[in-house]
Length: 402
Image (tube, rainbow, N blue to C red; front, side, top):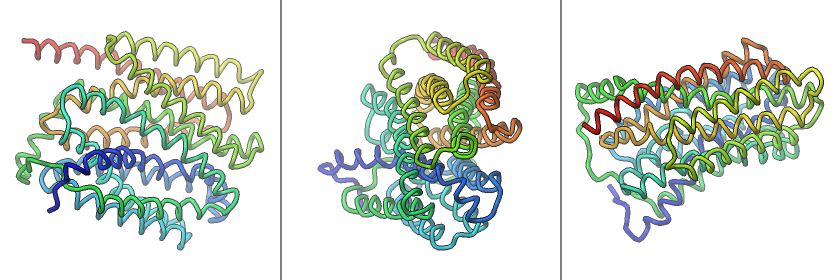
């Protein structure tokens, strides 16, 4: 097994950061193409949206179990193999345009991406500690937000010029490039391998999941991300079919949505030393105010500008909340970084896929008003869960002090 060379650590760290948004690219790049894919494959909007849900759920459930594998067998070889699988399946989707083939490939891609992303998040815990690690972790959600900014923007142009298949050719080529760079400049970062014993692994998972602040934090993360996914699933059909704009416009709207998430993450990083409870309470209050305005103004002003403006405001607050809770969950169990990272990322995707797809179909979101109703339902749930989370967090902090 090739260990990471010290003179390559700087570039390898940059590669690790670059690979963290790959899951977002795989999710968001083809969002502007959803209507075109549905038309070309002769399936319903719900059927093509399901390809995204299959990917997210596969990515989520895989991450839950992957951490222990990476802690036992290392990061490097597994992530290399996963990049190869992801590249291959991306080309298959482009070459075999069948909805059931797409479903199958997206499920496989979810598993492959899970190995890559968890390995790269654990990479930082392997090599860094203290304030430097804390600073790097606070950058995760900011860097991850690059994907919903760039991917749909790029995807909208690719769809407009070359058609929807070009999105998957791009993903295949991008992951192949990363594979080559990883082989040249990266290596194994894990220093202490855990023995792969199912009994001890099960005990580790049980101990982590028994921590209410951790599990409630994951639910908050999932619903926060779900707000972004709700917009991603519904906006192509609102923008293109209701407002009559092109896929490029959908790409621009998703770019602004993703930019808002990043702005929220950057704001959270700048306020990293402020009291957690106060920050989250203010953010949720602003979200509720914005979404109420979104609902009440929809009858007099419902257009692409109001849709994007309200969504950006809600997502700035969502990115702010996500960054704070994400950092808390990832640093909660530093001795089992792979497992904690896997549980955090995996459960977040599972929760978000269930809530987003469920609420989009429950409200049949096709307008600003219905999007507002969906958002206020999810934000209200976040607020209730956070109250309980904060009580358990206070208990944990008191226990640590004693």
